Image (cartoon, rainbow over all chains, first blue to last red; front, side, top):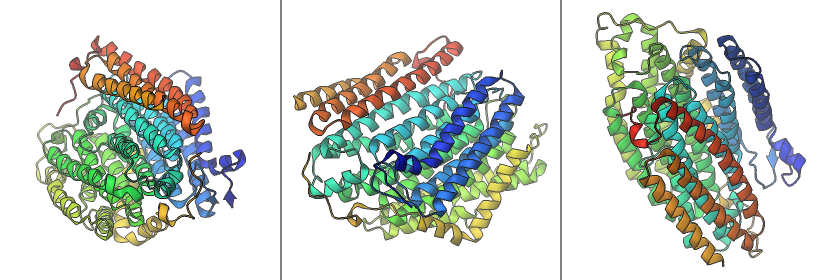
Length: 506
Length: 97
């Protein structure tokens, strides 16, 4: 079936999974406000949210299996979109599952916390689908505004409020850059459609146009803020530390994946022909992110902050895939996003279990000798750490994720050998903090009188076991996931498209 | 007129950026962010004189989003004021490291 995006019906048809999710989220928002806040109501809203996600996933899979296409327009209907949607929705489901159990402990009684996760997921789906800078802006803001609230959802905690304020102010600041970039690109090309921007850059030889280049630069700054790339990463550790643990996992995994999905589409579809302009800045941002993130992560004594810097570092690795700017780069991104999401949710499920109820701090010292009291928890956490490190076999799919990014970098026509060397060397540095965690869990004695971590509740255990098993299985049989990533990587670069329009500016 | 409008918009945007980076009061920082967004709106309106209605449509979207963002942002500022009795960013320093 081919959707005609110039008609309202075709547009609605192409957006059915997104509309299902949004309508479900709006109905649930009313349901959440229907009854007074209580632990039971919070749980019911959470279960209903999981049902909405299941329905949306079914819709996405149905659309993906039908091999649908669409005319050129504001929405992309392609495998990349559906693949990214599945990643966002599974992250949202894991977040809600963990939230159902950890919210009462954090004294968050509002069911809205689950519904806002759905709204953020809807924004992410729009981001992955957008082929127009206007739609892209709406998607970014839908996601961001929901996540600002989620970061500060624990109103009783001053740290939560502080993290949310920092996240909000810097997020709104970065929106300004993103928008000004869009405005200047619109000024230089006369359109906001990403595909048409790419075509006009080619057909009107705009490669040296000052307005376009400043616009691309500002857009890059906006993106770098959203993916927490150095030097625009200052908000991330504070926001991650302040937010409730499931939300931190959501921010580290899904928000980052969504920003990169959008980044890749814009960069490959619109700006591939002016790679001379953005290649050096992206190169330096990627290198700085990998180096600074890894070095600062070494100094962390708080588990959540350590994982925040680790997520900054993984953003740097993904920037290498963006800099490659090839279909191989976008398939490496999809593989990486799956492996990284699994490892992140597995890790945060353990953090949520070890964290003492009612206490904010998550010192790494709490993990001393975890092996002797809760061996399976330690093993699960160890696998996730090794996956984030990119260790073969015991780290599961994490190793292949890095492998494919390196492969994309080394086969790129842009010559990314130095950046690949930086990637490998900084990965060695990252062993310093990932293996440190493994060492304290397995080799240190449990301190006298240390509190026993609470038993894992069923849904959190499901998230942890599911993530770890998937990581290990995909590590042994990466072929299926790699094939899936390759077949869904096709973002059309501008050269490959139909003959350029010969119409002059209107 | 186009060049003057774009120059004014760039000047307003720069004032907003400088304000965000130098001011210490959360409300004023937020006002500077709004100034940045409105500077962008001015660019869009000016450019839509050349290219047609797209720019004006974009302005409507930006204003809607800015309103939603203001609602959330002020709520966050209120929630921090309840804890700290201050909206000065220098007093907000629990998260470190």
